[in-house]
Length: 343
Image 1 (cartoon, rainbow, N blue to C red):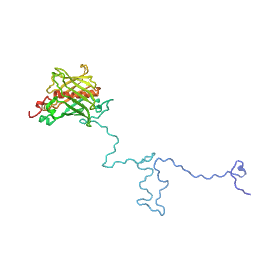
Image 2 (image 1 turned 60 degrees about the horizontal axis):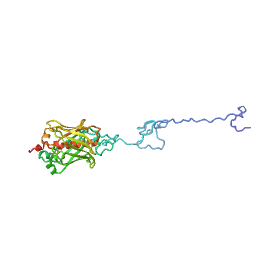
Image 3 (image 1 turned 180 degrees about the vertical axis):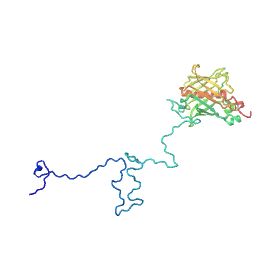
Image 4 (image 1 turned 60 degrees about the vertical axis):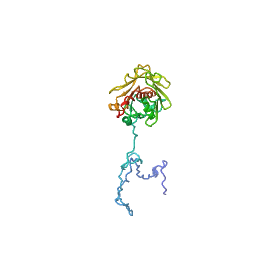
């Protein structure tokens, strides 16, 4: 009598003819390891020929794939994802892409970069917050030099490294310039790099003689135009020229004292700036020697102004106006009798 084999169980010992079922053979399993690059060709020998009936592609060799190298792909780093598409290499004739914006640097002879001004600073006076010296150069007018015809004065205001800060232009009519001479009333516009008028100077008609103490020179300074920030007033004096620098409410802030003689041959003429009490020297306005030819045939002048760095920008602007007033009073007519080559 025969029966089908019963699955193995501990209740049926092998001594009675029962045996544990034979386990099926396990196939050899291989688990792929983590690949760190482009997978290579399948294992095994590379077939030397194509399968029956298959036709090779144009340009393809038997058993070889063009442009393929086992385990390596150009431009791909093992262990990292394939690089994404980005900007390609610039073609010849095109500039390389800008990685970092260039930092503007002021060059001598150019315009000064506008710094960040203090709080409540009038627009356009931010330039004065970071400097303690100014250079003023008057432009030479050929018509005035050769003919003697008085023209509107033009000035360039620079910092100590030669960068332009302002550009000043006199606003006057022909009759007033040539009839009143250096005593003429005028308006002077001081403009920045963008041709915006940032400072306005107004000088009324007055006298500068010590014999007229009630009608001395004054100048009003506005920044922006229409907003008075200070004034310059000539003080009565017999020997030395003296001026008071006042703020917007009329309080004396600084004083200026000039030399007994404002004429100097091959030398500078200095007007010293003092504190309110007139004892502490805080700066100066210097009329610089500009050369024999310029001094003899023209009335164009070079000036320098020095003041404390922490001085209020409004008072610095008033000192700039005082420099122009001193130029008109003492140096505009110094060579008026010889400012023409025909005299």
